[in-house]
Image 1 (tube, one colour):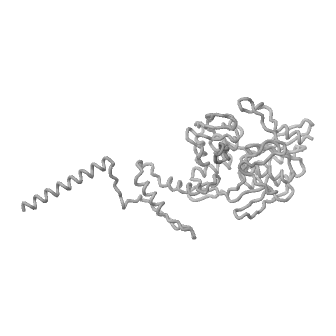
Image 2: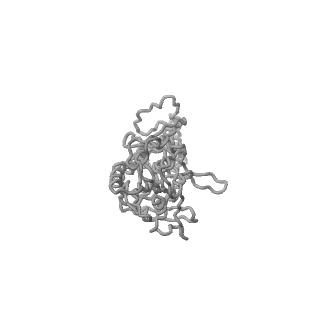
Image 3: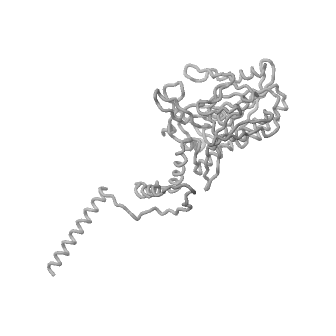
Length: 422
């Protein structure tokens, strides 16, 4: 009996010491407890993968569980954000900056853009091929396609092809388009600071902008007289959105009533929009035939043709383009150039030669998918540094500090009016 008591006391002491040592190690983080049966309480539905795709999702769920279990700030573990982030990463792995998954807020922003009203600073963003140092690798960089007229960005002097280096101090050199838009947008009256780098300069510059409600009118009409006394209708087309067709029809009605001698179509700083809008506008000037070619992943081509009887088929046309003319605006300019219907005046265009489909998905999300590339009627592909070259090149002169010269003189417009006035 006495031996049993000694053994019991010894066993009790051993258990106590082990418990103490284990507790000390846990408290000092020298020992990691492995909760082998732990898993976050998440209901997963529709787990079946697509047919003919074999993917072992064990790694995915192992990583999900590990992050959920081990990350120190449990309040930051948001299953919805992790879920959307996983889809964004999957889509981004394709390597196309224009193929993107949009969580609910970004999907809302995208629809507001095409609707013509949103809170922000008035910048259209895209990607361009950065010039590498000698021996370096070419890279895609976030750049301004165009500042919109009358917006805080335009007033502050933001220019097409300005490279966005930082947004409110956050590195933007490898940032995707949607994250950049999300950071730049915000409530009216709040500020955002963009750090930009401009070609031809040696240093970056910080530009603070105050967000405002941006209401974008797609079509603006004015009339100018040439030196020879001819009246020219100047149609400024800022984008191809939901309002474009109605606004375009109103402008054309006014043009016909005024009886001008020609039309100057200005698509400078037009970042694009709906492909159908480009076809609609081109059908105003062209009498049948192809307006743009679409080429799929198998190299098969299909054509978009004139889809209505135009009202401006006989008037002489000139088109103004610059580095901010992209996508659908390049489709319009390229078709008119190929079909010998207009003279292009200005600077080389941006170079965005792909077509995206916008799809609505569940829970207010969406996706933009590059489905094809587009070519001009003669088969030219306008992409990256290979933008449209104008028939008559007119570059905006720079002053010593690399700013535009005489802001009151539009040399590109003057040249186009001169051509139409002959």
